Image (tube, rainbow, N blue to C red):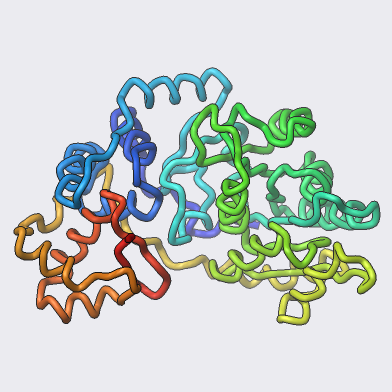
Length: 377
């Protein structure tokens, strides 16, 4: 089995560029999507860092940039733990993850980069899993490893831990909800170390030292599904993080698989519902590998281009106050399509998008699905 063409590295950041990217993504009001817009507009992290304070002030407030010393300390601390940062497009960045809309621009990585370059399947499910559920998750993980897939999961108790354990010898990837030095739950620290020792990897987008909170787990789940070609759900209640992962997988164009369970077991209610809603039913590993095989020769299209290291020039910056006023007058707390703003104001798309970016940096703009935006009251 060969890596898909999408796995080829497209960029290599030097130390200064990596530092600028880390400062940018660690700055206030800058998430993965805003980061991508800034890099696409300015061509480099350094240029974006220089422009962000003025842009945010034009949007209505000042924001905090990540200091150089903080970013350097994080790079050093990660290195002392045996890890490194990998940028989207570099070797070691999971090839399918780079194609999701909110792909992390930088991943903290510990372990084997080769494992991250392989086709992968995610296995997720109940933390309070049954003995049968854990056993079957292990069987699926073992079978996928034998078929040369890396097994991805979130290092949680139950199904996650069973999948990781079964795939230790063939390669498994743990996606963390906290910093690289904050393994959660603590009772899986030994498992996390075994993953590294046996040729697997750990990845996270969160800062070094970050203790995971409840809202960080759905954020992690988009990476679990984004790394993989498909997601296998084993035992999931009707309200569970595993169903969030399955929903995200569908939105990302991944295949969703579910293992049927007893209708009398509430831990299987969510996975049974997934099957009713069209997920592929899994009773053996061949149910997964047969569906995924065609995807290996059909990598997704290349992602929206980012700048660096060649550095394209900055986009249009000829925005005047009257333009900003026109865009603001078109906005309200009710979501509106960006194309409607362009038609309403008569401004060029570049100008409208730049004003929206200024408002976003200032924390005054909320983005919604369908290319819609609204003002935050």
